[in-house]
Every structure is written in structure tokens, then in C-alpha cells.
Amino acid sequence: MENNTIFLIDQKEGLSLEFSKLVSMMDYTRVTTIREIESLTVEELDFLYGEESNSIGMLLAHMISVEKAYQIFTFENRDITDDDSSTLNPGLDLGNSARDQIKGNSIDFYLEQLAETRNKTIETFKTLKDEWLFEQMSFWDGLPTNNYFKWFHVFEDELNHRGQIRIIKKMINKPKGR
Image (cartoon, rainbow, N blue to C red; front, side, top):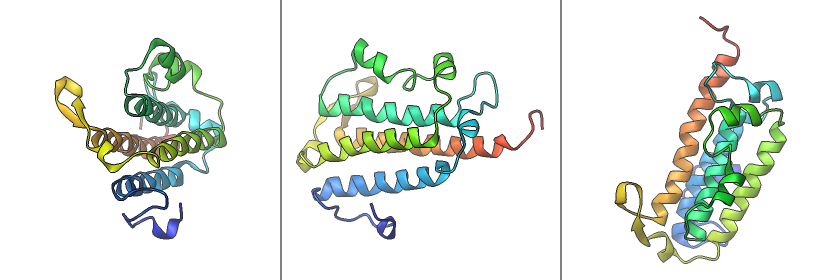
């Protein structure tokens, strides 16, 4: 993706119009996330402000796992199995297990996984027709949704966690108790 078009919601090569709009928004979200994290050290990625807090690395692993989960939900049209959960966790659920396991990784590790997961998403989008985005099904609390909303939720989740990342970065240099 070229940064000189990052503020355009426009046609993307190889994608239909509706997928182009969606990917334009996903691209902007990802570029701004990468700008926040690209120079972080392992120590900064692993920083925990409190006993039950999430590290930046944990949040990045979560973003990766959420996107992979939605690949399963939407591309394979199925729920997550126990086998899937063992692959997606601890990043998907976070918590104590994630605090124990998600640490010691460089920024390159996370950037590669973010890119690999996103590339699979985009390549699959290229094979689908716009109508797929509007297919309706039940979702949370049995309410109707469509694939468009599900993929909006993927980058909306990333936006929320990017906000957390910004706060954590401010906390890294702030002594505890102040």
C-alpha cells in the first residue's frame, strides 16, 4: 500500500468497489497502528503496567488472532473449533495465559505476522464478489449482521487496541504510583 493514497477511500487494484472501500479503511488503520509500534523494543512490547494488564505485544497478538478468527468465521463460514482455539490462543482470549506466553518477541515478529495474516485476508477478498459482503446471518445476541460488519469489526477492534497501545506507551516512561 502506498502512503501517498492512505487518506483515499478508493478503488484498490484487484478488488471490487465494495471490497476496495473496506480495504481502504483497513489499510489506514494498519498504517497508523504500524506507525505506533514500528520502533518499539522487546522490553517496550513486553511492558506490563499492572498485574492484570495487557502488554503491547499481547495486544498485537490479539489483533492477529482476531483477524484469523474472522477468516474462519467468514471465509470458512464456521465457528472456531478446539483445534482452532489452540492455534489462536492465548492471543485471542488474552488473560494470565497470554501474560505468561506472549513475551520476548521482536517487533519484526509481530509485523511479519500482521502482514501475513492481512495478506491472506486481501487475497481471499480478491476472490469474492461484493454481494458476499452483504450476506446476512445471525450474530451477537441473535441479531442480524453481514460479512461487511464482521470485517468492519476486525479493524474497529484494532483501532480500540491501538488506543490502548498509545496509553501503554505513555505509561512506559511514567513511574508506577504517579
